[in-house]
Image (tube, rainbow, N blue to C red; front, side, top):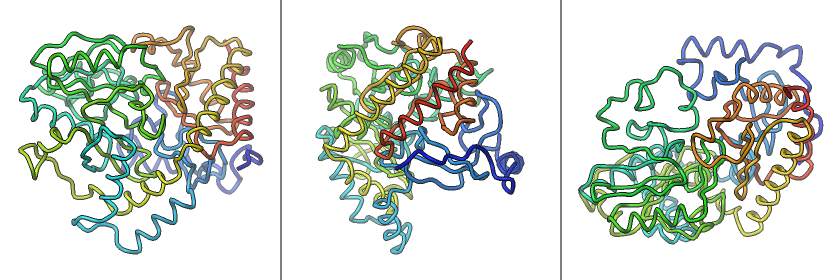
Length: 436
């Protein structure tokens, strides 16, 4: 891939196309978007609408080519429109798009997940990360006969009612919401949800059904687990008989072949996945110990279902994506992320901007305040106004960051050295422009 010839601006024929589309969108879609962070509310301005994408690039409807670090918030790992994945989807679509009956590829994808994550003795496919975490919690409650859930401030586990309290990502930017994390969530929905600080092991009792955690927090910027934190959660859950759930929707199959649990050597009872295992299509999965998973219907009394679970296009794309992720791929991802993190750190330091560039394997986060964040309170010290200014300055120079200060970047296999160096050069120029 090359980073050259990024458009400086819209063509005269397409000028204003993004604004025109957004005006149409707000007339038919609440806020003009189908996921809140896309609305640019936290950074200001009008969102760009993507017309197509390839490798590390996206093109908007005005013809601008952008170097993309969003990569569908981590759902893309091999680059946009990777030919192996595109061909797999094309072949699958020719055989039909949904059946309401089992398929071989569902079995193959479940087998592939189990082979990479040995703790997943049984796997259930669903259609999103939210579905995976919601179902895993229901399973934990059903298996233990307990009601209480413990989650961590700043961890985002999807938009189900019981998990929005003090969630990260776009939830952190909503003003005027009630304490459960969103208007419309009744107090009863979170009455059995306890929220505790990340990176501190809570003391549990025998009323707790489950502890759910992002093993690497990636929705409040990037916050790594402190040494002993995940091990402490495992020991405390074992002590009281609670289920330990790792939300690996972001970290799964990206941090390592077996995700964060392989990297840190801690095995949860249940794991939740999404993003990478769909190759860019809608997918989710949860899996874990056989004795827990067999509480699910049709074997047990915990009900979970979905018409599009194990969709033939999503499983085809997911299998194709995972086929690209061997040892060499993970080594390349790590090198690329290290190059990006080092470059961003140097660019912001040269501009005199207080910052911390965090990296855990292939994940890179940008915190615009002095010092490394260790929990949600630390993460919220990031300078959101400065991030908004930097976001637009970088976008004007042809680089797409996520339009929210609590998201992270996702350098992937399509981001070669030339692309990373071009990104760093443009961020450095933007940083000099916006430095206080």
